Amino acid sequence: MIQATLSPDLIDRFAAITGPAHALTADRDIAPYLVESRGLYHGTSPLVLRPGSVEEVSKILALATETRTAIVPQGGNTGHVGGAAPREGAMDVVLSLTRLNRIRDVDPVGNVVVADGGCVLATIQEAAEAVDRLFPLSLGSEGSCQIGGNLSTNAGGTAVLAYGNMRQLCLGLEVVLPTGEVWNGLRRLKKDNTGYDLRDLFIGAEGTLGVITGAVLKLFPRPLGHEVAFAGLKSVADALTLFERASSRCGTALTGFELMPRLGVDFTTRHIPGVRDPLASRHDWYVLVDISTSDAPETAARMMEALLAEGIEAGLVEDAVIAASEEQRRALWHMRESMSPAQKPEGGSIKHDVSVPVSAVPAFMAEADAAVMAAIDGARICSFGHMGDGNIHYNISQPVGADTAAFLGRWREINDLVHGIVLKHGGSISAEHGIGQLKRDELAAIRAPIEMDLMARVKRAFDPAGIMNPGKVVRN
Image (cartoon, rainbow, N blue to C red; front, side, top):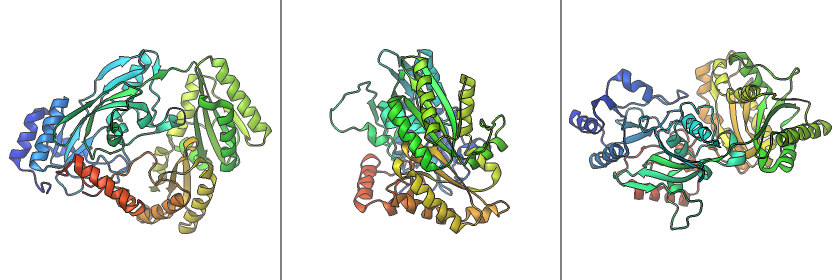
């Protein structure tokens, strides 16, 4: 049974491990660690611990298991499903990885970087760039999210199409188990068939099996050619056809293919400073195409020009612009990455992070749009995302003038509606944000009993005391 209260003596025992300066107990100091980034979850906690070493993490977890104290690992706290937020009304101790932020090694010959679990993603990108390499994971929150959290949620980002998600970008892990034992799996091998792949159990586990304190990550040669284009189209079906042609023409050089609606462009140009519509006329749909090549800049330029010319000739592309500089490339990506925060000034938003087979994207969106509009008159659907891998952020802004609380009160109803259509098309209710608290019960409802039982067995095997991130992913 997990502790229902934390005595002053027990708090002092935990604080002695990190030192009082890194054991936060004052309400004002704890407050930023309690709220999930979208504001959906507001937890409670008597203590936030900020360990400065793997040894301190080990001692904290050993004491937590001994005393049956719930531990919530937290990285940059940029999640969207309540996976890193403590539970409301509980006595969860937040374990912040902020101080575990070292780059341990960069090996440009072996194309790896070894980093602490609390390293900010942008810091890893910069370490790779310093040795003329690329770490391709890119997220809107890369200036604050941490690599341990990226691994714990199996983050994808904008370059999955070419490089894969975190499972594909990670070679090895260091993990502190709930018992305090440390598993050093920091292997740099691309081929290693010695037994079970323990690494993949922790990637995507959302901190329910242990704390990721270190990782070996893959690096890649920096592209010599890089082109980004923004194109207007009539329909999602046309976007899919253009994607098929881009895949055939560009192969692995196609690093991004993002889908955006007119409404999303309106929101970003209205609310995000410095963002403007790159095209002279309005279009119903847009795609952002990103092409990177390793041989020469001219190769990427020829690919992009040929693709757009073919798209225009086929009647798929109504208008397009190719970025003429790195500044313009960043501006086009900034528009895409700003679509979610640009919804906030428009009022309440019911959001979905889903994936369907790429070929099913138009059918899914047409069916979901019809169902949502029938359920909520005047709903403003802002669906955008990584069309190249079928991951759509199917977001719905409240009708103009609607009551925000009443609209958000229908979150579960609309989730069930949209997720039912996702499953009908063979998709997933969580593409890259994880399960956390938000989708825990829904996961249990849609997965086969044997699958949920296997997850529960894994949880019990690694965390017999049930202290690790309770109430997330699976019920304790």
